[in-house]
Amino acid sequence: MSVAEGPAARLQALFEGHRLTPTQRRIAHSMVRRAADVPFLSSVELAELAGVSQPSVTRFAVALGFDGYPALRRHLREVVPSGPAAPDAGSYNEYQQAVEAEIENLRHLAEALADPEPVRRAGRILADSRPLPVLGLRAAAAQAHGFAYFAAKVHPDVRLLNEGGSMLHDRIDAAAAAGAGALLCFALPRHPRETLDALTRAREAGLTVVTVADSAFAPVAKVSDLLLPAAVGTGLAFDTACAPMLLGRVLLEAMCDGLPGAQARLEEFDAKAAARGLFVE
Image (cartoon, rainbow, N blue to C red):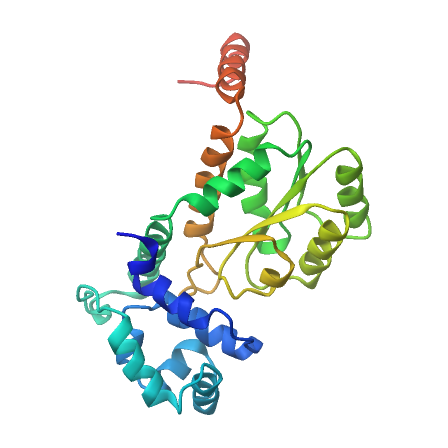
């Protein structure tokens, strides 16, 4: 199945080319996350799903060129095929529902990866950057740290930027001066203003910005050259980020494919780790 055939991808295509307000981007994001269900939701139900008002849903439909939400819903029933019936959510407790939601996020990610070219392109861009700065602030700091930890085993110069402050722009400038051609950013909600400022600075310094974000409509989209979306789970008190983490590992694999010496560096690390007794079996 190509990416164009998936419900989420068809919704993404519907939103492309429209200048959406932050509230409308929130509605669009919610629709993508529940792509198979959206054609059967009322405007009130969609408003509750997105955490906005019902009139906002109506204005959103008009912004997409429809007479109102009923016309949008009729269109969605024509272009977004319904998937297999999902288990009754009422049969799950709140913890199980959170897990089920993450499984659905992973399904959407698998659907998007049916077209691997964006990830492969990103992998080539990151592999060619010397050094490679990896940015992730606040909620995204753990994702950036995990990527940088593994990337350093195969890439000769990885620079982790996981703390904000007045020196962040200095470190971006230093990476650019040292020859960096790209910056990888992990951006998760709530999106810090400092992340947007840092990406703006990176582009001013001539870096190509590759971003892993929770949505194609995330605020960082406007300051990214290549954005790879992976939804977060929102059913618990704090968001869960299984799909962004997995996408980061997929991106790591694509980067390794663009590094001719990656396998040799891994073997060298394993030999040194064995000699030092670094790990227990």
